[in-house]
Image 1 (cartoon, rainbow over the protein chains, first blue to last red):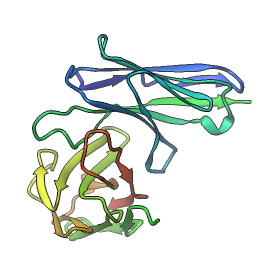
Image 2: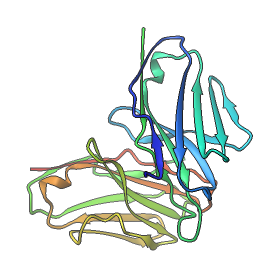
Image 3: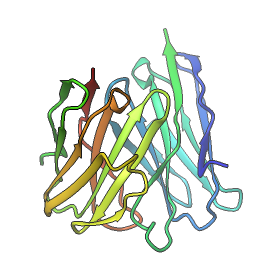
Image 4: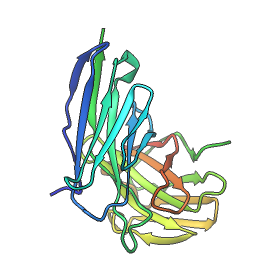
Length: 113
Length: 114
């Protein structure tokens, strides 16, 4: 089983749609969580951290369910510029692992007019 | 503030040649990560350092790959000899030590081995 699993997509949605991505992680001791965004031929960029109580940044909402080892990202009112690959990222914690991040393979989103 | 700086942005060379990729960390960051990304294998962690010390190099594909941190702000990734299957985008990322801290990536080096 992969440490971080995501639906690869692609998700093809019209502008204005609401879309949700899910991610599961295997290590129950994981300590911190992030969503990154990667545009074609560009580097991954931090979109938002994911906090235990859930958090929102404009049109983006992230949720964490530690019991189910599940993270989600909700995008409301999708824009063409949201088209990208969204990477679920987990810090596994533990001795020697406290500092590195495990990246999921990413979910591709295509927003069309 | 300047982000992570990688050089060169693009490199095209013939197989068998030595390739050196360079990375400058964000000022104040003390952890450094080298990744490789291809369509087939996605983003792979090659090696990471904390305070100039290599912590985990289990992702380095073979002895042809080596990485160093000669000082706190700079790192190199060397491939010698290079092979066509090494063609990929190589990213460097840095962060402040700590579980809640995100990584910040450089623009990457697009490497093509002919």
